[in-house]
Image (cartoon, rainbow, N blue to C red; front, side, top):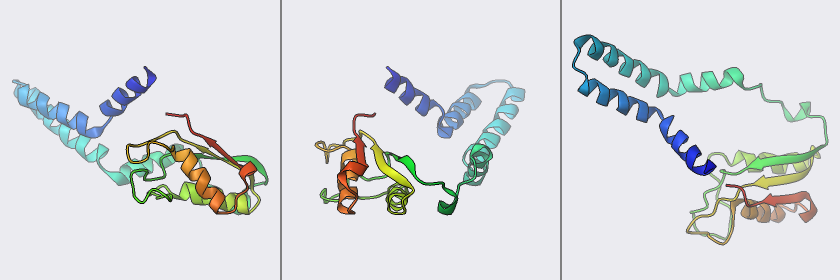
Length: 161
């Protein structure tokens, strides 16, 4: 149930849905006064919600500034690496294909190598039709082992959704 509600909410908060709804409303409204207000609303929503600079600036308001590696007081118990950093559909399937968020994986390996964390925890259960037999967390753990991270320092939580 949570997954369904999450998918619906994710769909409804997309700016293109808002703009489409406003454009349909603009086409259906009869009053010239309401049409003028809706027209300006469509323009404002399109400018504000499709502008990557505004989005990035707004996100930085609530995010704390990142720490440098030197500022970390070692060792932390775990580096938790959330999923979504691989392209599970890419071939060949014998290796890890990183997407634009692949720095999560690289940073975790680096933090372990520098002694800043004791374990790396990969959290993701995503499977695809091209790799139905392995979850992203398992694939990331297998690849981390190839980087000579000892098995006792790797945890793969592969049942998340």
